[in-house]
Structure formats: structure tokens, C-alpha cells
Image (cartoon, rainbow, N blue to C red):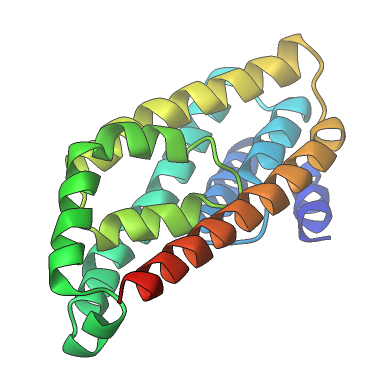
Length: 196
């Protein structure tokens, strides 16, 4: 519904205002707006926006929105998880171990997160909370976002991909990935309870 409304409005725009609206939507998607970035880029490319400016604008919007979410994790999430009341859920020694692992694999994790629709905002917030470096975030996510946007734009322009064809598989992927993440968290929680 929100995607349809956004695309209807985008279709009525031309020139810089169209690119500005694409940037705004992708920026807000990075902070949790419930519109699939993939579908938005495909639709914008299919509407005849010029390829190179669209790639640049989409890349900037995606990385900027993700950066805000990552910052929120770094600033607010990191403060909350270190609060003495949170030690009941995540003891300090376990937090240190998680931070070490996240720091060691930060760049590939940030790269891979870009290709997990529906989980990106959550995982970038968690990455910030675990104090991954901004450098790893910007390099990993930046390269992945550039590849992602370029492939989607090329797919729409050269191969005739349409967002309607991709929507159902993406919706299913979101549901499966979310269910998998919830299952993993429950298993980790049960394992921690059993050890305690």
C-alpha cells in the first residue's frame, strides 16, 4: 500500500524532484520505513529515471539512512546494553566477547547485511550497539549498496525486471529471514538459561 502510494507520487514527478523523492524514500527506508528498497530502486529505474544519476542518488540515500540507524545503535543501543540493568540479559563478559567477534568480522558482516531484506535496519542497529567501527560499516555497506543498486538498475533497464515480479519472493524472504532470526534468538536464550 505505502509502496503503491509512493510510486504513484513518484510517477507524477520529474527531474530533480523525482531524484530527491527517491533519495528521501531510500533514506527513510534505512531507518525502518516499511518499503522494500529493492522494489523502490527497480520501480524508479523502470520509470525512466536516468541510470547514472539514479545509481548515485539511490546509493547516497541507502547509505545515509543506514548510517543513521548504525549511529543510533552506536549511541543509544551501546548505552542501553551497558546499563547495569541490562547485565541481567547480557553479562559484561559476554558483551565483550560479542564485541570482539563483531569487530573482527565487521566488514564482511556489514557487506552481507545489505543483502538481507527486512533485517537490514535491525542488524545495522545491532552492529552499532556492538560498536563496530564506522570505517567497516561505510566500506562494507558502501560497496555492497553500490553493487546492489547497480544490479537492480541494470536489471530494470537492460533485462526488463519489474518490481511487481520481484515483490512476492522478497515478501517471502522477509518472512523467512525474520522467522529464522527469531528462532536463532530463542535458541540462544534457551541455551543460556540451561547453562545458568
